[in-house]
Image 1 (tube, helix red, strand yellow):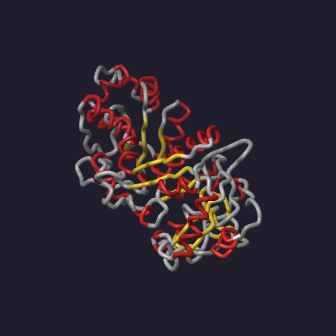
Image 2: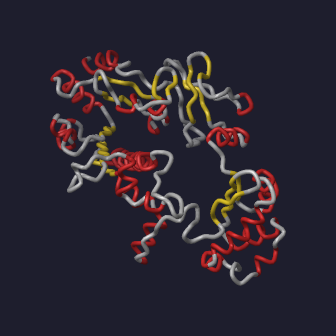
Image 3: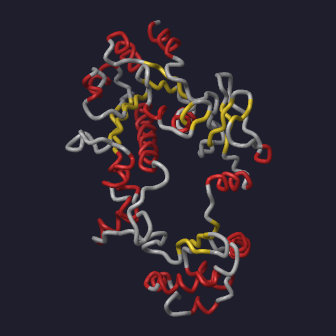
Length: 376
């Protein structure tokens, strides 16, 4: 979808009758379709093809001949079974960029199923996520899937640049486990460099303090202090300037070493006002803080900041959808005229901005037009 937003003509090849599994991943539903599917499939065309059918497979071979990029996320060996693996594909199209996304790579982990929850467990993310003294908890979105898609897109763009310079395509391989281990950044480096195996810390950070959730008078608030200057500003805002000079809290390593004592003092002070009041008071002082929003409040914040997070995508082809001004945004749901509201692409480009000209396709919606093009 990211590449489609940026102008690529993306043909989504799906199983006839059922299509992409996420078409059935609901509730919630909108427009009679699963919002899970709708969230990641705009700007694509759907081509229903049975790879076990000789005519459909021949059309897919022709699609490979004409394509710049092929993405596939079958288990290793599946595309080879249908005559569409990397070796065959580069015979058909030497300039093809072939991106293979797997759960655990194409070696000893080839047979393992790659589902986000499974990767969060096996890849260590759940071991550092959850209540400080509770059970491991997954993230609230399919974070490993999303991060892997981002890495796949970056790899493909690099391969396309190489292809443009040399005419040579290449195989791009991305797997969920490697992506997660890389994305654990400071946690994984703490293990590889210092042998430190992190555990669940709740909302605290292993290397920064105060960097956690506190209870204000009405609801939770996050304080994310990243340096001593910000901590001194926090102490002034809380009317406890003496804390900045306390030897237990004077530097970040001191605060991390005494994080429990610090949390008790800050928690008592923050409980005196509402989260909104603290946000208004502390933010001008340069203290990173804010209430814990639900998704509706988060979208509203983005609107108020002028980020225009929601874009209407039209029902049918017919040009790029216009993006409304923040103060004219409709409520989530149907944007009117058959359009649907989706979260905008976060990439801003001054000359070639993302497009929003095609709603997520219905299963097989473009099969006839694509088949006619391939057969011509």
